[in-house]
Amino acid sequence: MQFYSDGYRPGDPDVRPAAPGRENGQGPLPEEVDVLVVGTGPAGVVLAAQLAEFPGITARIVERREGPLAKGQADGVACRTVEMFEAFGLADRLVREAYWVNETTFWGPAAAGTGIERTGRVQDVADGLSEYPHVIVNQARMQDYLLEHMRNSPTRLEPDYGLEATAVTVGNGGGYPVTVTLRRTGGPDTGEEVTVRAKYVVGCDGARSAVRKSLGIQLRGDARNHAWGVMDVLAVTDFPDIRLKSAIQSASGGSILIIPREGGYLVRLYVDLGDLDPGDRDARNRFTAESIIEAGRRILDPYTLEVQDIAWWSVYEVGQRVADRFDDVRPEERGSRSPRVFIAGDACHTHSAKAGQGMNVSMQDGFNLGWKLGAVLQDRSPASLLDTYSAERQVIAQRLIDFDLLWSSAMAAKPRDPANPDGGGMDPAERQAIFTQGGRFTAGFATEYPQNQITGTADYQDLAKGFPVGERFHSAPVIRLADAKPLELGHQAQADGRWRLYAFADAAAPGDADSRLAGLCRYLSGDPASPVRLYTPAGADPDGVFDMRAVYQQGHRSFSVADLPAFLLPRKQPFGLIDYEKTFTPDPRAGDIFDERGIDRSGGALVVVRPDQYVAHVLPLDAHGELADFFAGIMLEPAN
Image 1 (cartoon, rainbow, N blue to C red):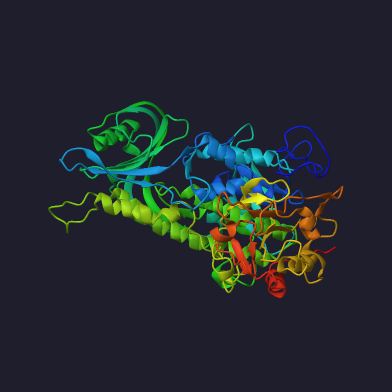
Image 2 (cartoon, rainbow, N blue to C red; image 1 turned 45 degrees about the horizontal axis):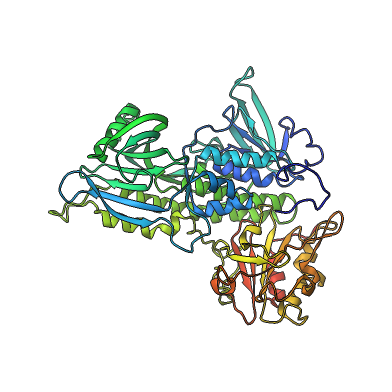
């Protein structure tokens, strides 16, 4: 964490100085905004937390509730989501408070013919997938972290509560072409309508999204007419795996998924309540908390379950649906105009909760879109960049739907009868195999963005085999040269909209002026065709748009900052202070990053990473022209 570059000040460094005009907060909701985010769900708060970083952008987020979420429905936090939280400086808090899902157990009908028995036990996340664990924490707490981050940002962004969107219309032009009608949901002015005009609107307002309906976008898919009860409880039980994630299949056909919660005592139960009559619309409403508990007891038999307190409960039907597009541009219009209105999270994909991906994929929706809106509104990128949101995220949502259908079907399947192997059902080993095969997906690492405007080809992938183009940048341990501090390379990237250039040095000595890395530094700092020179505004810090980090092959004690190119020691505004935190070396105690990530030791490699932490390109260090060509289609030269 860096601070004091603009002068010493006491207090919490996480509370950054307010932008001009925001010293007393954001003020009342204006009539015109750059971005209006509708809904403070997972997608909305991640999106808003990114936009809060840009003082030049007027962003607001409205919420129909009267205050922050108190009891969240989602709880599973994938490894990839924890990595994303690190970019906001929040991962340590999240991991400290959360329950860690280390292992998952599987239970099935006992061989003796009565009750249940453990049939398998697996490591939840495979070794080497991430430096972070799969964790469980209440959705409301995760959103609290992000809301606090927003309040502490330069813009002092906070939600405007008690406002729900009822209609969205997109005009043909003007500076603020989107009109949003809002209705007050509480207080003395309940029912009053408020109109806001915006350059861009993002609907993060849930499965019944008014934004989506205003655009005429359909959710397509099917209901499965199968009910599950879910409850967070404090319970006394003799079931031995109550503090392990457990998938239980009873002889009667009922199933429970047990998810231990944070704090050491709370536990979530997903209880199979069976098929529903599709013609009986009130069937789901007839379930009670007591009937869910009783169903759970039958499935757990011969183990006992005594519920002492219920924190929250609900009944839901399994269904998988995905929107046919994630923005306001119809297929026949694509390419002729760029989107102005977007939908994210449950507004564009709904599914069961048992795969633990709803909140995670929703947050990644917001993370994908936030930096793109920031780049366009700051005139750093053309509006065509926004077309990549729907193109990238709709594919990911469909993959989620497909996986959720497989996993929820496996959870609800009846046991296979050994005496009738062709009679259908699923045995515990098959269910465990489905879980294991989906491990990369549930950890959040199945996302692979195809080649497009912001993701290049894999022509030079052999130079950095461990950083596949289109996949998330996989961090690895390194040592910072200047102060010998061991840390994770990927943790140096913040959610601030900057592109990352990770230069892995060739085999030459650090002080060799003829090395490929030295040549790259000279090109980036001095060549008029350099993306850094072309796209960094006058007066901005040298790394204000492109954050360059270098990793040398030599040990940190074999050379010093005196051997580095000046470009790796940038000077920061307003005092010209030197940033010493751009250069790293391998950490031999944790494994050499060049070996761990398959970096070519002879020529090195340049790994270009998007602001949302996905690898955009792998290039040779001396491919200066190709680097310039790649960014020519993404960036705009500043007006000044």
